[in-house]
Image 1 (cartoon, rainbow, N blue to C red):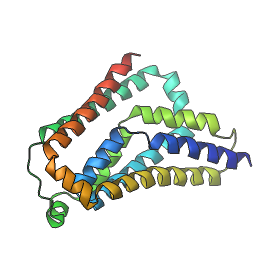
Image 2 (tube, rainbow, N blue to C red; image 1 turned 135 degrees about the horizontal axis):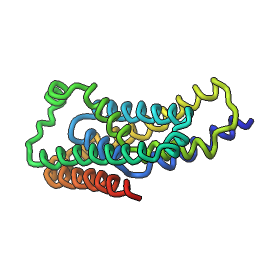
Image 3 (cartoon, rainbow, N blue to C red; image 1 turned 120 degrees about the vertical axis):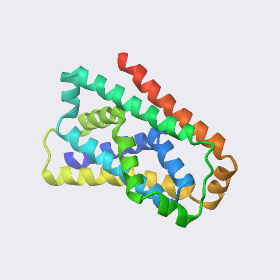
Amino acid sequence: MHELMGLIGIMGALIVGVVSPGPSFVMVARMAVASSRAHGICAALGMGLGGVVFAVAALLGLQAVLLAVPALYLGLKIAGGLYLCYLGFRIFGAAKAPLNVSEHAVMASTPLRRSFWLGFATQASNPKTAIVYASVFAAFLPQSFSWLFAALLILVVFAIETGWYTIVAMLLSSPAPRRAYLSYKTWVDRMAGAVMMGLGLKLVASAGD
């Protein structure tokens, strides 16, 4: 029973956290409207794998490590923030570039595996996600648990992360959102790039807190 209650608590906390807009949402949303539904879903799978990495790390005691070595958390914040700034800068810089939305052209020009790894890198570069996982697991994880519980928990994390971002990709790759994106591509990309850079800068600035 204690394992079931712990699983329910972790699920609830992670669902609330995953639907909160952040770098991952921006990346999947833009991938879905600018490329294709398949690319958005691949990015969502990458987000799911990133969540699994944080879940495994939390199970292994990530919070204790970060508390014991503050410099490690500081370094993760700076590195993650700079990576988000880099992604935002690239999106912003390519805002005026014309986009061929032919499904064949998109699939041929950008391998699906690149979208997957970009999603994974975006998720894994955010140390705040690591802290969220570590804190949630510390709050709800039973003092002792079985390997079956750990395996089930990892599957649940993957399902929550991948499921939410797949929904985002499915909705934003529909014809209406894509037409709107094509009409205002320059401004949408500039806004997405600026948001991504802003999140990165905020992360770097918080390193001194």
